[in-house]
Image 1: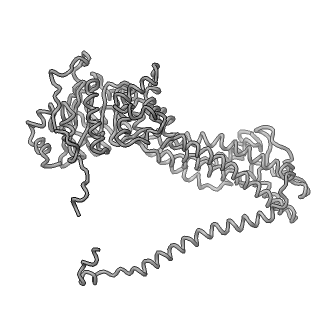
Image 2: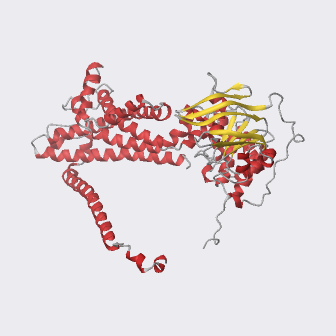
Image 3: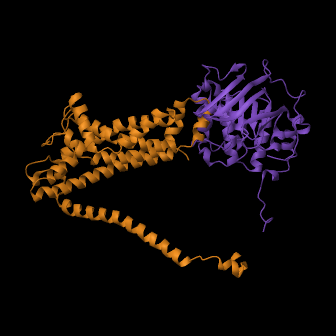
Amino acid sequence: MATSTGTLAAVARWRPRLATRRRNGRAFLVLCLAATAIGILSLLVLLGDTAMKGVPQLSWDFLTSYPSRSASRSGVLSAAVGTLYLALIVMAVAFPVGIATAVYLEEYARPGLLNRVVQTNIGNLAGVPSIIYGMLGLAVFVRAMSLQRSLLAGGLTIALLVLPIVIINAQEALRAVPSSLRHASLALGATRWETTWHHVLPAALPGILTGTILALSRAIGEAAPIILISSIAFIAFLPDGLLDSFTVLPIQIFIWVSKPQEEFHAIAASAILVLLALLLTLNAVAIFVRDRSRRSTQW
Amino acid sequence: MSGLIAIPTEADAPPVSIRVRERGAEGPSVERPAGREHVFEIERLSAWYGGAQALRDITLQIPRNRVTAIIGPSGCGKSTLIRCLDRMNDLIPTFRLSGRILYHGDDIYAPGSDAVALRRHIGMVFQKPNPFPKSIFDNVAFGPRVNGYTGDLRTLVEGALQRAALWDEVKDKLGTSGLALSGGQQQRLCIARALAVEPDVLLMDEPCSALDPIATYRIEELISDLAREYSIVIVTHNMQQASRVSDHTAFLLSGEERIGELVEFGATRDLFTTPRDERTEAYITGRFG
């Protein structure tokens, strides 16, 4: 050991304070654990409370009935189906547009003022309150494009809302693809497009899908913009087409919670559980697709 | 303590005698197609990354169907020079150059000249092996596929792997990932991939710098074999390697301003035995660099 050879004078110049440093390290660990616990515990309490209130009303009838004046006969069918359709529209719009934007910004655009302005704007858009998107959707889709208070107008609005999330995550994923992969492809005489399509996008797909999962969760949970877009009324039917009126689970929950009767609060909790189940199912699908794409790229 | 563990360096390479390739006038000149003597003619090439100049006034002719080595210390612009030849520097937005590079007499930087069409004829092997994260077969087949090869792909892939001296090692596992191979095998896969599009030139940017001495030796053997069919340009910081594999050598050096200049170019044998410039002599005798 080196220390045994050190002279007494050399040892005197060092004050390792090992005990203090170890104690500080432990204190920091406890602090971090406590912070983690706050998040997890409050989530568990919330889930437990909702489950206790909501589970008793959960039944096949609850899933297959329309809302009604009486809480005991109410169900979430129109809201659950509306949420599912909305999610599909959001994905159909935000996924291709978001990825194409990210590909342009990362693979084609030359760095410069324009690129920086666009980049800053996308970053800012991700932080704009969702109600603003609701107003934008109301003005542009509902009024100007006269889509009325339709499923399509709602879907497009939410697609705009989550677009920055998809773009930013896709950009991160594209940036993480090593440039040696691009060089290898370009050096073989492949075009930029072929390089992007055959090598860069497949390598970035898992990361892109992670962003999509985040975006989907956000889209399904949003109520504020939909309040402006959808007519908050009894929707006791399923949307037949893109231009039908619709409702979604967060709105249905909002409506039931605002009623004075206790029974409606209870079925609101049940609707929250349905929303959670739907969210987890959609995310599970996305995670499944992501893991498959990971395997097809033979890293 | 020291001496117990021998750290392998390039100096400990297997006992390959340092020899200068003998492939001059008596060499096989039958494959040499009629036409121009030089595959590349570089005329007064200067290059910049943003405001920083990387190369100054390089004039150099790269002979056809020969191995040309570019040597010099780190940062002298060797990689910049070789990347000018297939316009890979185009990918760096701040890059610009002046002067001309003629490929079979055509200015590759002329307006309207197509980098994609050019790269199809000029294969490149990089410093670090960079197989695609796909199967061995798909690694080799990608180039022919995008370039519209109409013949039998299996035969072509097999031929490319054979020329890269990799076929025997991988013929039973063409479906496994290229990244599952060892470093040296990966680099030979990258060479096979480049050969599969039937290029005219092979550019190699320090192809052995990430490999162990045995793998290096195999790549060098391969280069000697390939030199009969292709014009090869190899960048290396290893002078023994340059003397072993090349017919001609260009020595680049950057001075105080870090701008690479061509100090000397000539037949490898002459450059290593009777250098004309004292800086070349100082470098090859290991007095700096």
